Amino acid sequence: MKYLLALDIGTTSVKAGLFDETCNLIASSTGEYLLLTPAAERAELDPGTYWQASVNAIKAVVSRAGVDAANIVGLTISSQGETLIVLDENNTPLMNAIVWVDNRATRQAAELNEKLNTEVYQVTGIPEIMPTWPACKILWLRQECPEIFRRAKKFLLVQDYLVWRFSGDFVTDGSISCTTMYYDINRHAWWQCCLEAIGITTDQLPQIKRAGDIAATISPTASDLSGLSTCTKVILGGMDQAVGAIGAGNVVEGIISETTGSALAIQACATNPSIDPHKVTPVYLHSVPGMYLLVPVCPTAGMTLKWFKDAFFSDLVQESVTSGTNIYKVLDEMAAAVPAGADGLSMLPHLMGAFSPLPNAAARGSFTGFTLAHGRGHFVRAILEAVAFLLRQNIESIESAGLMVSEIRTSGGGSHSNLWNQIKADVTHRPILRLETEDSALLGDAILAGVACGIFDSIEAACKSSVMIKERILPGPDAGFYTGVYRRYCDLDKTLGDFFQRNY
Image (cartoon, rainbow, N blue to C red):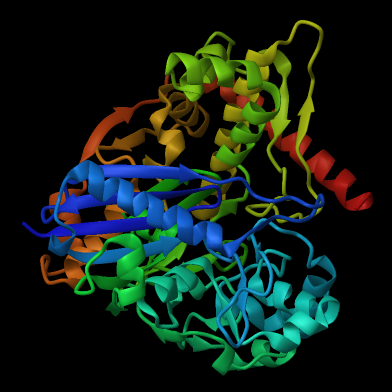
């Protein structure tokens, strides 16, 4: 029996999954880590944390499955986008990774906007120059940390870093690199104009291959540390949103999927990168050859719920550890006891700024409308509803670009919540489809591994046999009521958006 190993590195956790050659999940493992937030605008992580968490997750999943690592033919690696890792001439990190939600490069984003704004969307698919993009972070390093910038040999993303740690080769693909702001999604090459503007060369970047390509095999050093065979192929997965779309069967035009993990991201498959005449919807390279994805992203969705849990539910977290219960199910039960609309409590989940569909790096989180009658359950429900409202805002944006949305396939940690799925169906007035394999990014990685190792003829053929719908959640009695609550949310978002901009 041949096995396929999937590794997906998210913003606050790493996930590993082991699949058989028919893409059935045999075992999985998750490891969480805490971001370092030394200031309000900053988010960092030691690059070694990504590596160690990945090795631990792989060891755990292989042990749980009880399989011989020699039978694992492929390891596909995918990750969050935009997080920047800088290595010196000895391939040692010069600093903590600058995580994608970090907003330190605001001034540099404005500077690049002056130089490149007219070309950015056409070349890169990025609708607005914001501190999120690695190009802005590299320019920040050049201007604010000149010694680090001078010593920098390689600028990598998380997937690039882990592919190198496992294989010894510096390789990337367009799916993970398309949101650097220095990758040309039409020519599938580095955008020289942007590289000149930020002061780096192509020698400081990885070699470009296609998502789904084999980078190399496991290096002897990585084999010793991870237990994997040196015969196992290391495969480029791409951005987590793209592999998640594959795992949801979203590989042809007309299918919409969404992932509620640390961030909320919506994926709409398209063949034309210029589909949006308004130039407001982000366009990514899909991990499916020849395809693109419209991917509106909201930085803090599940991350908002996790923050609230960690900040205000320490008592229940400890109880859940002692009793062995799932703390998120406890929060769900509390929110389910609160009526739709949270008795007038509204929430904006912009804890690290807003991106889609209303970009605003100055935006912040907000709870508005609470009274003495509101309890913790109201605040939990308001968070769940706020993410659903963001989903509806972005679905409307996708439809304005010319793509119709009749149903939404859901994945990520948020898809485990029956309440959250129902709220999304009620708010969007569309069926929410749960997938049999709820972690679609891992399944997408496994499918890419299967194709790369010759088990499947194509991504499309693998999706037909491997992606199954588990449940359809239809809009319920609260759908009509939510129309008014959604308008209230949009009004608050616009009003406070202007306030944040004035006081930034």
